[in-house]
Length: 118
Image (cartoon, rainbow, N blue to C red):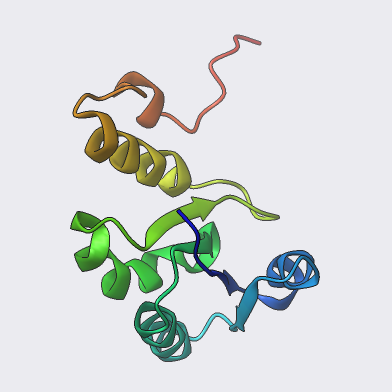
C-alpha cells in the first residue's frame, strides 16, 4: 500500500519528519488550532498521520472516528515531555483493531510510576 503521510505537533516535533518529506501541520498548544489542523489532516487523504503525544488528546477528538477504516492509520508518538501513557494506549488500540486481541495488555497501560523501591 502506498500513500502520503502527515505529522501534527509543535515545531520541534514536526521538523525532522518534514525534512524526510512528510507533510507537516505545526501547531501550538491552543486546542482550537490543534482541532483545526487535525480536521485538515483528516481531509487530506493521508495513509498515515503521526501525532505528538502532547497534542494528541485534542487531535483525537477529530481523528478517533476515523479509526474504523483502513486509512488513515493514526500513530501517537511520545516526544520531549514526560509520557502520559496516551501513546501506549493508542498503539494498543490500533493493534487490537488489527489483530483482534489485546497484545499490549492492560497491566502495562495503567502505571506511569516508578516501581523501584528506594
